[in-house]
Length: 396
Image (cartoon, rainbow, N blue to C red; front, side, top):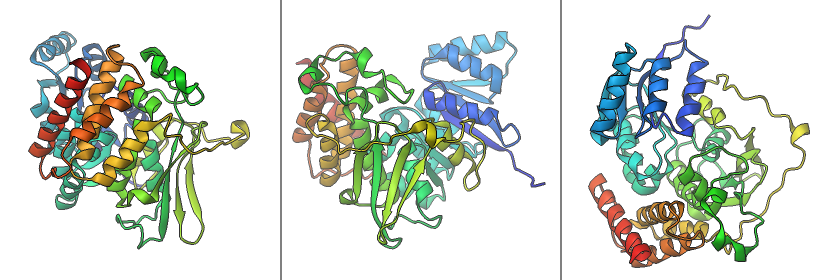
C-alpha cells in the first residue's frame, strides 16, 4: 500500500464558500491533510466552529478586537490555536515553513498580498482569488517561477482548462498545438431579462445565482459577467495565451466548465456537476486524484446542453475586460478596482445595477495607459487611484 505524506494546508478565507468547500474535501482525507492555519476577516462564529473541528495551529482575523474575541472564545473551549490579526499575519501564515499548500480564497484585492507571499515562499498555491493575477499579472507569474512554487487554478473554468491540457504544458499554446481556449459562463440570473429592466434589479436578485453558491460580490460579478471578464485576464496569465485566442460562451447548464481547441480539430472539454469541490479536490491532490464528495455526472439526467455567444449590450463588463487586457499595463488593475467599488455601492443600494459598467468604463478612460505594475507597491498605488476615481464618480 502506498504511503501518503500528510500535508499541512493554510486556507486564506476559510469561512467563505471556497474555504468551506475546501474543508469539506480535507475532512474526507484526514490521512492526507491537516490544517495549519485558517483565516477569516470578521466571521468570528464561523472560524471558531472551524477551529473546534480542525484544530489549526494558527487562526488569523481582520482586527485586534476580532482577535481578542476569538482568542477568549478558544480559551474557554480549551483550544490552543494561536490567534493573529491583520494583513501581515495573513502573509506570515501563507509563507510559513509549516505550510505545504495554500488555498488563496480571499475575495478581491485583499487577497493579493498573501497569495503573492505564498508564491514567493515556494508553496503549492491553489489560486481561487482571480483578482491576484488580474492585478499583478507578470509579477505573480515571476514569483511562482523564481521561487519554485506550484500554481494550480481553482476557478472551475481554469481548472477545467488545466485538466484538458497536456501534463507538460508550459504557458506556450503554439508549442502544444492549442488553437483556442473557451471559458463557459452560466449567464447568471439575468440572462433572459429584458434589457430595459436591468437597471432596476435589486441586490437580492443579483446574488441569487441559478447554479453556483457563491459570496455576494462574486455573485454580482457573475450577473454582470465581469467575473468572466476577470477570468479571461486570468486565463491569459495562467496559460500564456493571447486574448484573441480566449473565447467565452454562455452555457446555462454549467456542466461543461471549459474547453480547449487544438490545431487538429480536436476539442477537449472537462465536465461535471457545478460543485467547487471537484476543482478543489483535483488541485489538492494533483497530480493524483482523490474523492471530492461529488456524485459522478449522469448525462441522461442532464439532458440538453445549450451554448450561445454573450451579448455585449447585456454584458458590457465582459467587453471592458477584454479591452483592459488588450491595453495592458495597469488597465486590468483599474478595471478590477473600479468594479470592486461599483459592486460594493450597488450592494449598499447607492448605485444601480446598470451603472456598474458605466463607472468601470469611465475609470478606465481616466486611467493612464502608460503605467506599469512592476512591483506590489505600484500595483497597490494604481489600485488605490482607481478606487478614488470610482468613488468620486459615484458619490460626487
